[in-house]
Image 1 (cartoon, one colour):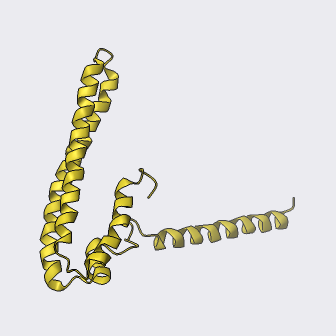
Image 2 (spheres, rainbow, N blue to C red; image 1 turned 45 degrees about the vertical axis):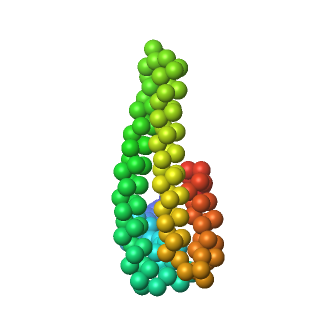
Image 3 (tube, rainbow, N blue to C red; image 1 turned 60 degrees about the horizontal axis):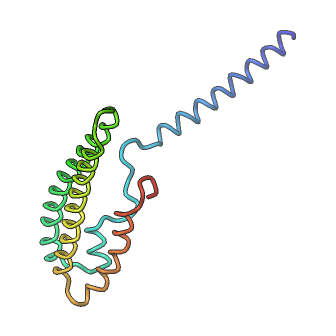
Length: 155
């Protein structure tokens, strides 16, 4: 290969690398890191837009929502710890099946309490609705129930 051919080949490779670097730089510069922006409106926004909640209703709803989620986060964290403790039992070959069953019952009880609390929360929210708003509010519930009961990774 003579010098001119080698120089052309090197310039071609440099040009390809330069274009690739510019393209990657633009991709990473325009790519947003962090939590993904919400594609669908939040529940409060849906209550306002789709159900027709008034500012007064939203003023009552927001503290209820905050209290609910504060309690729910604590309960969900406790359930997570209980499940972790349960699954770490696999390392103990001496543990009896009755102990495993008892720990599984605790998980079931905690999950039951969470589900009952969620049900009461939504029943409480229904009380905020006017008779005209109830059908619209109720039409949101199947979507919420589906999101709560979908298998992990299937959202």
